[in-house]
Structure formats: C-alpha cells, structure tokens
Length: 319
Picture 1 (cartoon, rainbow, N blue to C red):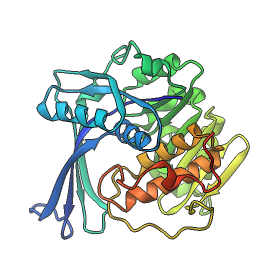
Picture 2: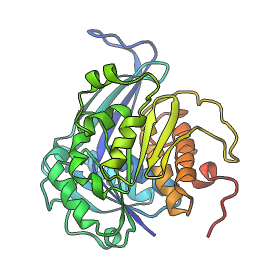
Picture 3: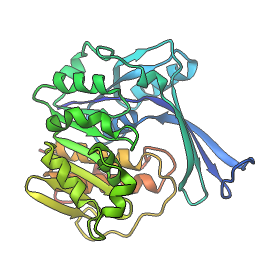
Picture 4: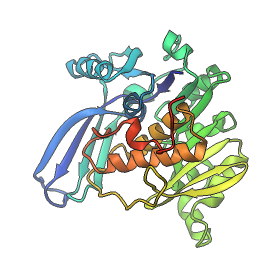
C-alpha cells in the first residue's frame, strides 16, 4: 500500500571541510547541492526501499526547484502534491568537520513555516490511497492538526525534527501511532525545561522517563534515538532497547561516520518500510537502524547503497 509524506522540501548545500571549521575565517571544503528536508529525505529513502510514496510540500519557482522536481520523479517519488509558491524554496546549509560531524547549520524554511491550514489540500489520489501518512514538525501547528484529522484511520507517524519545533506535535500526540524523536526533543515536547530536567534526571534514566511520558500522553509507540546508545522503543507494553544488528540479528560494529546528514530520516524510512513490508515493529526499527548506519557511512542524506535487501532481516520473505 502507498505511503504519503508531508513536510519540508529543501535545496541542501552540504560542505565537507578538509580541516576543522573555525569562526571568522574561510575553510577549504567540498560543496554539494542535493535534495533535502525531513519529509523529502524520508520519501527518497522510502522509494529506494521498494515503497510507493507521495510527497507533499511547497517549492518556489527557481530553476533549481524545477530540477529538484525532475530528480524526485526520476527517483520514484510521486510529486503531484507538491505545490509551487512565490516565496523562495527552502534552503539548508550544513558545515561538516573532516570527521563527518556537524559543525554548524542554518536553514531558510519560510516557505514551509508560512503554510496555512488548507495549503496542502485537497488530497491527490496517491495520498487518498496511502495507508500510512508521515508528518514532519517543520509544518506549522495548525496545519499538523488539520492533517492529523484528515488522516482518518490511517497509520500516522511523525518526526519531532528539533527541540525548537517538537512542541508543534503536542496537540496531536493522542493521534500518533509512531513518534520519532531524540531525548532533547521529547523533553521539549513534554513542555519541560531541558537544562533543568537534565540536572534533575537520575543518572540511569537515559530517556526512559520521557519516552514513557509520551506513551502516557497517548502516543502508541515512541522511537527515541540517544546518540551512540541503543534506540529506545516505548509502547504500552513497555520499553525495549534496540541495538544495531546485522541482517541475521548478530551484533554489528559501529558505523564509520562520513556524514550525519539524513541519518535520523533514514531511521524513519527504514522503520516505515519495514512495517509496510510486514515486519513487527521492533524488527522494523532494527531495519531502520541498519538504514541509518548505511547513511552515516556515505555523503548525503540518502545512501546510494540503500535498498530493501540491504536492510531486511535474512528471514524476511516477500508476502
């Protein structure tokens, strides 16, 4: 069954410096321009994972936006729900140190931030036929509320995106079947002061309390990343820690970091693809972690090596 993603569509400029990036001076680097935005990264990855996916959002009228639309269509993403705007397309600039870590980033997301209720409606036939909708918190709160209502009985997943934007999902928590976040985003979504909460937190908590609180708030399942630590999967049945494994379930070595861009988006796409391919939730999250590891080891938000056979468990058989 098809999926639909709603959210940010950006033109990303990614810089990989050949030395540590310093303030108030220029740094030699290799620059690349690629598609970006959470919903866009998720949609592109889903297309690689043998899923039919429709993407909804806004783009400007620049020549680069025309090229981006053609690229998305060529990659298998349904673009009929992407509207055009007189505002400039969203842009993201990321500066990476030689070890692949993010030194700094800026984003111009006015084209998405200014979307009003009704801006992504009416639905296309591809969206109507989708059994799962994914929302990213780059969208304004009123629009997120509208889409959550329009989702009806479909599976509804969402990504908190950042500490600054996570609280936009608060009104729709009871409607979410699946929430992706890190611990800081979870804390912001729960309306707590992050710094104060960290001071009061017990040393062994590791996000468990925040994940449990989100489930109590109505979310059916929470997938919480915690840096290099195992991912937390929280449901009403309890909390599991899911570590990176190979396709046959053996412990996998930590990935070599080339570029952190799109890692969380790959986790989302791999998890949603796993569910669409019939995996139980914990196994789908494990597949998502393998997708994230592949993405960490390459430049760009969507790994060239990413495909469903590369992350599916060895026991998986097409239904």
